[in-house]
Amino acid sequence: MYCIQMNAPLPETYRLQCHECPIRHRAVCSRCDNEELELLDSIKFYRSFRSGESIVLEGDKLDFTASVVTGCATLSRSLEDGRKQMVGLLLPSDFIGRPGRAHAPYEVTAATDLTLCLFRRAPFEALMRDMPHIRDRLLEMALDELDAARDWMLVLGRKSAREKVASLLLVVLRRAATGANARTQLPLTREAMADYLGLTIETVSRQMSALKKEGVISLEGARGIGCPSLADLALEAGEDSDGDILS
Amino acid sequence: MYCIQMNAPLPETYRLQCHECPIRHRAVCSRCDNEELELLDSIKFYRSFRSGESIVLEGDKLDFTASVVTGCATLSRSLEDGRKQMVGLLLPSDFIGRPGRAHAPYEVTAATDLTLCLFRRAPFEALMRDMPHIRDRLLEMALDELDAARDWMLVLGRKSAREKVASLLLVVLRRAATGANARTQLPLTREAMADYLGLTIETVSRQMSALKKEGVISLEGARGIGCPSLADLALEAGEDSDGDILS
DNA sequence: GGTGCGATTTGACTTACATCAAGGCACGGG
DNA sequence: CCCGTGCCTTGATGTAAGTCAAATCGCACC
Image (cartoon, rainbow over all chains, first blue to last red; front, side):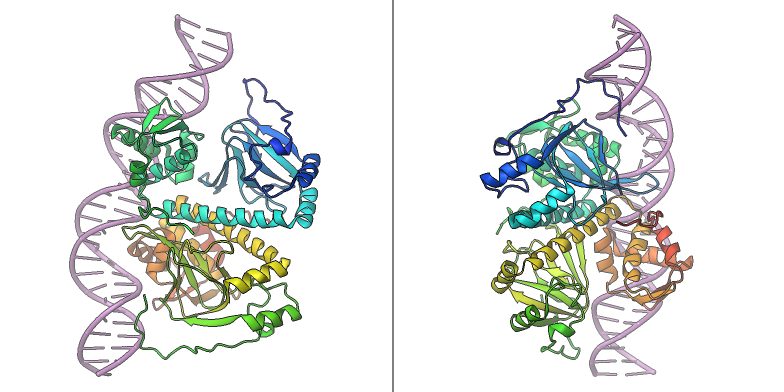
């Protein structure tokens, strides 16, 4: 499903050496040494996608793995009657693909313009055989995603519309945070937000307006948002106040 | 939170050789050879819990890993005001614990009387070092759980109460299935079902009654259920009809 | 068999969110 | 510049599920 696009073409030939890669220290390759990076350089390739473009369809054959280099992608599942639920948000350094499974269980869509770093299935599986730390990192990342998915189950199952919207804004603002007064551009349309939160577009819009009216957030155009106090926003999100005592 | 129990005491000394273990071929140890099993035999230990007993509290120190041998446990997260969401259902062969994390992100509770096979943290991490196939199996299991969690996000975010209840009954009946006319005992109370589905007890009860009245399921006492046609139930669950074309 | 208590069901009423339906705003193209 | 076309916002109304309250059931124990 490719949309006709009027914009300037994307640079098809994004080219980067691994050692200067922006996701070098967080992606699946984070523990590779210089020698290993050279090997990766020789078998990886880049591909870019336009906002809205479909990367993989639900059930498609999936014979590559990839890391998000720049931009934002979404994972979603749908029911036959068209109801749709986003089940994951992929940001730079996040991983796409499933060693040991040939087909994709979810649709993957570019939420913004997006560049991926890809490996074909066979060479990637060879990497996993030869570099055990890649498997280890993949396990770590899978467990982190599992935690994130389960956290989101609490949001979907038990939070009110207002808390849901605040929770999502918090996720987005936190990774863009520069000091207490955070501001950024939302990488999601209202529709994508609704699909993520299990709400309708209208309800999302109404809750955004309400939060704005009460001064919890500010809106600049449709996509820009700011927040004078993330702590207040966290309160609206119904977040545990116990300050995340982590291990 | 230990309840006072009037029932007969559980056998504290459940003892089993690994090679005769009921979850031998599905748990994290599924790929161990006989020699490795002997090692496991020497460092594992069993522990049993009463239905309703708490195994780990949210945020607790977790210095063991475990596999469910018999019974059923639940994973859940709660908000401070008491709202609660189950984020996982653990059945025999499922794994508890998180190599690399010292604290539990979820509460683990025995939903029925339950027996676990445990390893202390240090010996288990030694196993992971020495037997790479254990790491591989753990990755596989983590990815399967991730798929299950995401499937459930669709249920929580987009399905109606009736579809939710049907979806849960389907999960339980399918693993108890003997032919088309499935019947089993629910391992969950109405409250646990409600917490799993993001509903209230009353709504769960009403939907069960409605499904019974329409002949989709039959109820025997509070816990026993039967279903003359799982296909009809799947229809009520709003499940994709494309017959799960798997890889 | 009776009694007590927690679990479940059922009923009456309320409410948060969905649905249906206009409008407004921004941006690109003729 | 004006007009389309996609987003987004706002309003009026409907409804599925929540809440509050009261039976009823089922089991453990007497």
